[in-house]
Amino acid sequence: MIASLLFTRQLTTNTLLKLGAELGGRAATFLLLLLAARRLTTADFGSYNYALALGFVLVQLADFGLQLLITREVARLGMAARPQILAAFHLKLWLSLPILTVLGVLALNQSTRGPVIFLLGLTLLLQTFVEFVAYIFRGQQRLWVEVQLLLWVRVGTAVFGALILWQTEQLLWLAAVSLVVMMSTLLFALQKLRRAGWITDFAQLWPTGWPTTVVTKQLVQQAWPLGLSIFLSIAYTRLAILLLEAWGEAEAVAHYSAAWRLVEPTQILPASLLAAVFPAFSLALTQNRRRAGQLGRQTSLLLALAGGTVSLTFWLAAPWLVGWLYGSDFAASGPVLQLLGLTVLPVYINYSLTHYLVARGQQQMLTGLTAVTLLLHAFFCWLLIPRLGLLGPALSVLLAESVLLLGCLWALRQPTLLETAV
Image (cartoon, rainbow, N blue to C red; front, side, top):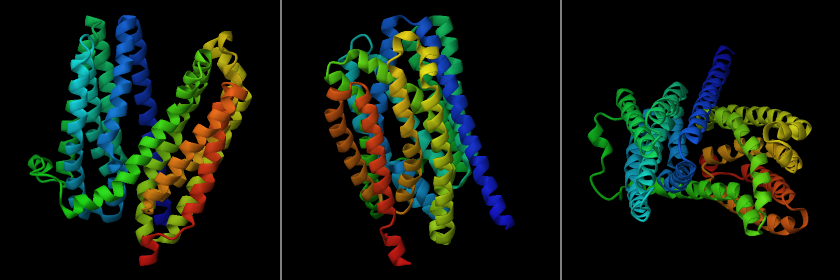
């Protein structure tokens, strides 16, 4: 009974730590963005956001699903997961080479903003390595280390970025400072990794040849479905805006985006909770499957209650909230926000269910479900946009997320290799 109480307390503490760091870090990033909008020219501010968006998409290839996979392996194996960590780190270095090449080509073809694109792209690439280290400690349920790294990156970038903007008003200097902060964070992260005993010296992190070891091949086999699923998820979240633009609905894009920008940040809550629960659930699967089932059901129920509360809040407050934040010109965003608000309930539950699939080693099934969800979303949008306008994509998200929820519940009822082995 006491152990169970301490376990619950640890999960609660980790969730609150992660949530607090996310809120503080995002607030710092938002304040830097506001200052950049005021201190930079309109063209430079546009270039800044373009470079960040471009870099974000490219560096997803360096993740390849390895981060969440490593968290699972560390939770299951503890310090015995050293070979997997080294193999994954070497693989990330190899995956970074084509990204650096693409960034270099893009930078050379952009005479004015080329250096900014390369520097910010390199910054985001290094961030994936910082996150990789953070996910190792997450697997040990030591989220305080992840919180330190997260705050160092976001608050450090915000503080030093604000200082350089105040002094120079130059985008290139902002990009350079962001890179320096990220490099210092990565050095700090690698030092934490060495002190924790995961590596004996930094030379171990450098690959000696092409990754052809048995451990690397096993990682690739398990990681690629997860990496593909993440890429499909990114496409899924951007699809509505792209299709509205393709239909020539410029104002609809603005109104839909205004509503989506209010709903998207609410995903901080399930992300923070699953950061704490995922390693505990992965560990429980190998030690106490009954406890894993209880933890999974309790987490999903908690997220359902939270999602339902957020959905109801958006439904009731949407007209007032849109008018207060955006003004009367965005009145059409109110009904969109109400529909998108309803999607929060299945999205919150799906956050837990998709993590359970990864913990159970069902990455390929998750990829298939994500692909089906993306195709359904595209079909529903194509069908509904001509009939409902900007309400069409919002209704499409609600339908697609509901299908994903049913698909995840079905998949979780299927036996896994781990279960058949036991």
